[in-house]
Structure formats: C-alpha cells, structure tokens
Length: 179
Image 1: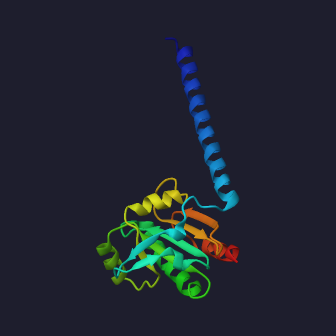
Image 2 (image 1 turned 180 degrees about the vertical axis):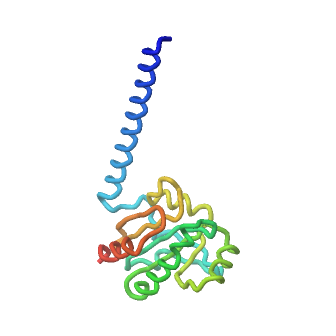
Image 3 (image 1 turned 90 degrees about the vertical axis):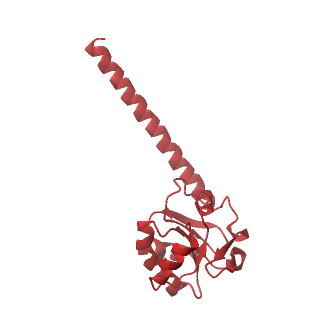
C-alpha cells in the first residue's frame, strides 16, 4: 500500500469514529432532554419498600406528600463517604418539615451498621442491596455508578438527578425548585 492510501484510510477511520461519537452524544443529550421534559419516573418509587437496619420495613408510600431526596450509596464508595455528612446536614436542616431524605445502601447490612456506628450520621438509611443499582438505573442512572441521587417534588414528579457526590449548591437548587 502506498503512503497516500494509508493516510486516506486513517483519515476515513478518524472521521467514522468522530461521527459515531457525535451521534452517541446527540442521542444521550436527546434522552436527557426527554427525561427532564415531563418529570415522570419510569418506576413508581412510592410503591416500593426497603428493609431498615433494625429489621423493620420502610414503606415509601409513607413518604408521600413532601419532596423526596433519594440517595444511592455504599460503604466502599469513596465519593459516597465524602457526601454523607452533607446529606446528613441537609436531612437535619430540611427533613423535619420540608423534605424526606433517604439514603439507600447498595451494600450489606453489617458494613452499613459499622459505617453508621463510626460516624454521627442521623439521616434515614435503608437497605437496597444489589437491586438498588437496578432501581437507580430505572431512575436515570444510565452508568450504574455511585453515588446517585434523585430528587422528587411533593407531587412525585422528578426534580432532578445527579451521578456523583452532590454539592450544597445542587441541594439548595432542588430545595428551591421543590416548592
């Protein structure tokens, strides 16, 4: 093969790769726009229930009527550990009257119990186990990564979602848009 042919083939391959990447980005943005446009959730979170660390059951139906901050996390997830004090503070400051906050552990009960015992966290925690990743995907976590947080308005419509550790600014934004 001549050098000119090799360069032409390399250029064609680069163009094809760029075009494929562009199409994928366009599809992801379009899906994100579609998800955000109507605030609907594919999964009825209010019909679910989860085990608490004390063995009792938490029914999500009991959390209706106030905005809900639903966080998926694990003890082995470094960004999750970093954001937990912020979520705990948000739950203490806004949880009594204005918000329901729930941290769903994608983990095993014993490590979660140890994690809580080592810290002064008071936010509500329930166990989602490995099924929590599937639920988070149904709520918009396309990558299945942790931490993942979804916020819902008092009417049940989705306010937003975030993959990665949340910030105080994001929580404030959701708090403002919930009312």
